Amino acid sequence: MGLFDRLLGSKSDTGGNTPAKPAPKQEAFFLDADSSSSMGNVEFMRRSNTIRRTFPGTASSPGMKEIVDEVASMEARTERRSPGLPGTEEAMAEINLTGGVPKPVKKTFAEQMSKAELEDRMKGSAVGVNVPGGPAAIKKEKDAAASTQGQPQISQQASKPGDIDAFKAWAKDLSS
Image 1 (tube, rainbow, N blue to C red):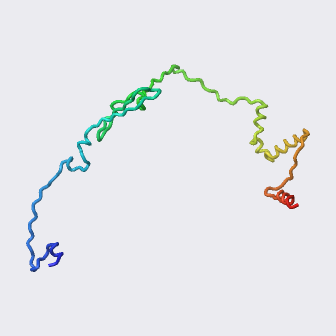
Image 2 (cartoon, rainbow, N blue to C red):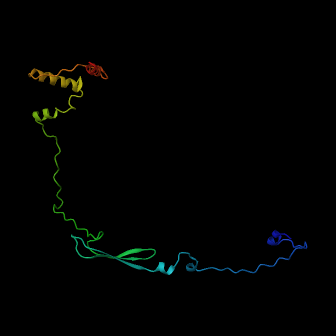
Image 3 (cartoon, rainbow, N blue to C red):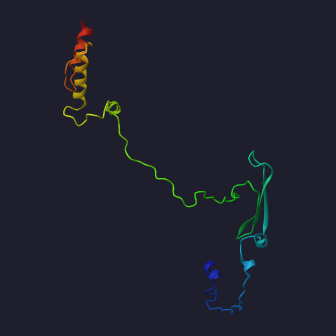
């Protein structure tokens, strides 16, 4: 007889079958809801607890402040809250002194601009963008007007974008 034969309870060493014993009759066994739960102390969880918190007053609302909460496992409610704590502001009734008279309409019409103010605003860089030649043409006109007034004008050579002639001239000045 082997080890597995003994564990499985099959054949005996004589080669015969052993009669099976009838299983004992089992009765149903149920626990009540409190005994079967694994939540811990159920009576402690069902108990209602009172939590009292105190706070010092502020300069605007002096004195000791207090909040008393009643807390159970499924619900919580505030029993008492001292005035001056957040959530205790009483809504002030809004008093309407106009008696249904509407407010006057604010006029938003464009005002007339003087000629001097218009010229002052036109000195900005955005004016003259859509003029042929762009702002550069307007600048040349201003420079030409300034040169006629007897002011010395600094002349610059016209060059293409990306031109390095000025750098070449500086290199010549350094080497000589």
